[in-house]
Image (cartoon, rainbow, N blue to C red; front, side, top):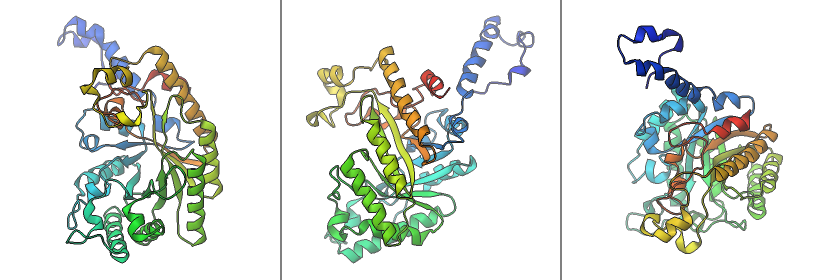
Length: 382
């Protein structure tokens, strides 16, 4: 809704056109609109790091009014939540879907944003055909490498000069530091990560190249990624940064371990980013209930979806305290952190509502379901 400049409005002038009640309510309306714009995250943190958001397809296509206006106002970096992953952007051998990613990139360019592509290689959301020949048989190593290079070349050429950085490889390690069992590993071997970074550099030498993963606060996994960075560097293969995802909870993880990871990655000489930040307030289900539809079981609703009707003040205070701890940590290490990206924009459109159980009501982001900045955010950064 357009709200005119306060200085251009007088109640006397409006009385001819609207009821007196509307005139009386006008200051309240203006105050609410001003509250939404009075604090801009990208400006507040301009001296520390970029502030980013990941956008879903629905958000890119502007299906929820007001989201894109809010994004332009509050953020200076954008990441595609899903539309640049292989199954979305390259669903069949001869088909590339650039339409929606193009819209995201154009929006980012229009508003002078730092664009991050996500992701060129991942074990999930990659179609089966990528690993198979025309008869459904698994490819040999060289054929899969050729297919990977072709994909990287095509995607990076599409966004050359428009996207400044790419998550080249996503989530390649297990919690114990071993390489994740995937078709990439099985067919190509452990050097598939090296090849992906080589191909990305060859395709566009001007973009920043990142490795991205979750749970990097775990010592074994952190150690494995540090080892990867050093191996790439020793072979002259460019890697510019490590993305720490940052899907956290009210009491998990230990932020001392997160700090250890910031220091460990920075010590290798690469840039550190927090790439997928959110803080869930909901209990994490046991393995048997993961993937369950919460709406089908009343007992599960009561146990795992306790705040469907709103967040209690004491839990909101816990969320505020947790975010304060996290943001304080980011600011402490601002010389090492280039970007902080939140995985979503508002609570109404967050993946946390449907993972690891569908149909829940979570509150993990800085903006509520009405696109308002949560009051505690102002308290934290002031």
